[in-house]
Length: 127
Image (cartoon, rainbow, N blue to C red; front, top):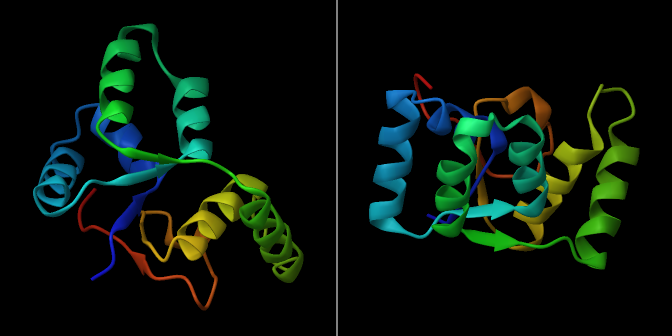
């Protein structure tokens, strides 16, 4: 099984104390170092509560943070263009492109945000 790129929704649930998210990330971390897109990092900081700053930083420091390269940006644009019939946000296209370029599976509860045929999406239960 390929390593995982963890979507923002799981990270938010972790920071908000959802036990299922904590258990999922703990189990994942026992097997591998989780990956995160810089897009998710920005989303976390955009919605962060002041009391969550230290925990947010600590969480991100435990993950492999993947930047947006020109290759990822190009693929994200193509994914957005190919899915005009869906109400997809460009940030989700960047996250999907990051997973595809790095051959990572995407761990998310928001599976409807990622209707891409070639993307390996896993949805951890009960988050």
